[in-house]
Image (tube, rainbow, N blue to C red; front, side, top):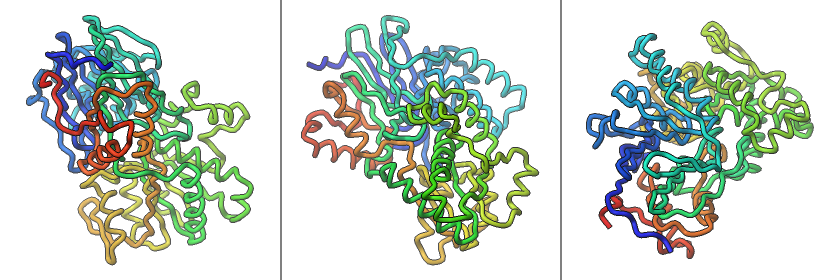
Length: 460
């Protein structure tokens, strides 16, 4: 039987309650202020300014990071600037990825190099990596346990146990099963309250087999056109998955037999993507069995002989001017900046070219506009303030999403040994949350515990 909600405990959503980005949640329990994520908003998403928070950053005792994507960690430097000096808790792999991701993000800020170095040093000193599936203690009798979330390397969900036995799980971002390199999400222990992401609560993705088939078909058509393939991809997670699956395709004799020109050059035109790929390679103990088996056979799963790194700006300029077919993987994943914008400006008006979108495109971003307006005659997009007609072919491969889809979310909840006492949906646009809510109500095992309404624990 689930425990009655303790009085005097609050969960306050400071960001990401009804949006996909800007995740930031505050758990107040036993006199402690425990924050889960502190991320930047992207596109048209909004966040609560820190001066409007119910506590000051200096009053936050612990900061838990579910993973190292910027929409979950991007405001940590501001938190430090405003006086946070508590412990930063995450998985070991997230700890390894944290500083490179923040260093890159801070390079676009107004901070001086010295200020940025000081903040990064403080973050490194305050942060601690913990193992999955082990229970650890905080102050005042609160315990926590990290589970593998399968979203990106190092991603986790967090289960808190209060002294009276009341339990809360923050799902973080849950990944899909059978994702390259990553282990499948762990099954969570039972909980009295589940704070559940709902990014793709309104749809299901292609399966892994379907997405590889579509990638193969589209690549063959794109290469036959003699143009370039542009893939806007997040430096962390998506870039490594794409390299892995392109390598698998290029290693398939049946696939290569279909096109003698198939082994065209593949360029990673993203300095951060290159650095993250090196870190992924160094963390092979956290890979799934398939990737580790490939590595043991002498075939590095995220490296191959016609994969090229574009490091300096001079090489980037040369790539922009290069003739002939090529696959270009570059950031940012939503086309809000970075080197992908240069490639799109140079190639989006050429009908020989193709653009692959393999991740979520937030409302208000150029990526979202390209996907939306490419379906209309005369569609166009503004890049760096200039108008470009969309003549390149645009493809959306939903199977590459790092998030679990509606089916995956429902299955993850249903896999728990017992139903959660209550569920609060976050990290999703309103229509996605409503769709997931309705799906839960239609599932017999979920009818009595889904709760979409704004929720405050001590109001019960």
